[in-house]
Image (cartoon, rainbow, N blue to C red; front, top):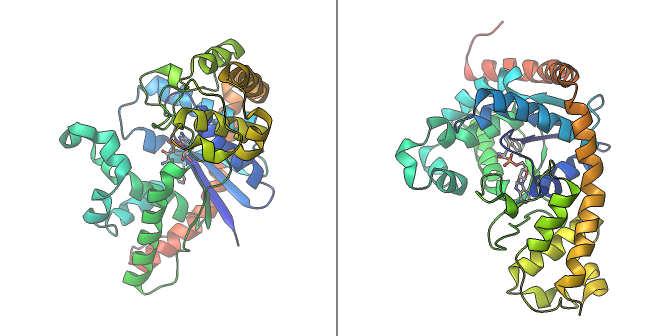
Length: 332
Ligand code: TYM
């Protein structure tokens, strides 16, 4: 059986990269798979989080999932810390994964930077928890943006080593689902850098909480070059900012860069940016409005998370017991 699992961290405002690379695909997949979507609060605390902001951000990501079109009654939406199997399996995987594997993780190197000695142990072991998230449900497919590819390769390595070590065919080999034109949305200020929640400039990203005005302003100020748009994608070579804006347009319109350039090739950014701003507002404003409406009733959001956690537990618990049996841990 095919089962989807994916997660989003409740750290800061969700941005266009999260939407185009992940959340929008979550919505598209829900009719064809059993889907489990998780707000990964335990991942968030691998770097310091203000407790009040963390619970607010957890509700906000939940609201974003629902506002974007995920149905919490057919799929499952919950926050990670409510299902104990994640942390328990992560510990087992801490004992399966090798130090050398984690040392190769580029996201840890980027996040810890020069302060490696001062990074939390949790930040280092983060990919093991991510593997546990997925494999606690024996999920087979994981929709993510391009930046999570390496973590999913590690998940496969962990599953394989567990199966080999214990002589079982227990965990499936997880398939990443990285698709669409928005798998790697870049910063609006620098087309060579990923759009990210941690970029100090909020002009670098469009967020779900931006007003229509903010969105238009950010796109107007986005870095570009002086040339007109080319008429086919080869002409975007060496023009990262232009390629990014065309890619964003294509992803929002549900088409390809080639067909965007058919329409806009030969025209300058003076024409293209207002069209992009209009499209971004048209697609994002209904989601932001619905998020605001949902956020006005936090009790309802918490009830959705609690219901999702119950249903997630019902899947994870029997799997957790089988894992304990395989490892030799006694459980009731
Ligand atoms: P996070 O919270 O950083 O991002 C959530 C999702 O958004 C995608 N994404 C992007 N896609 C395109 N362009 C961008 N600029 C961009 N920035 C972010 C990410 O690829 C991701 O799909 N480790 C994960 C969360 C996680 C997880 C999991 C994911 C925890 N457990 C299990 C899948 C399965 C993360 O930090 O995502």
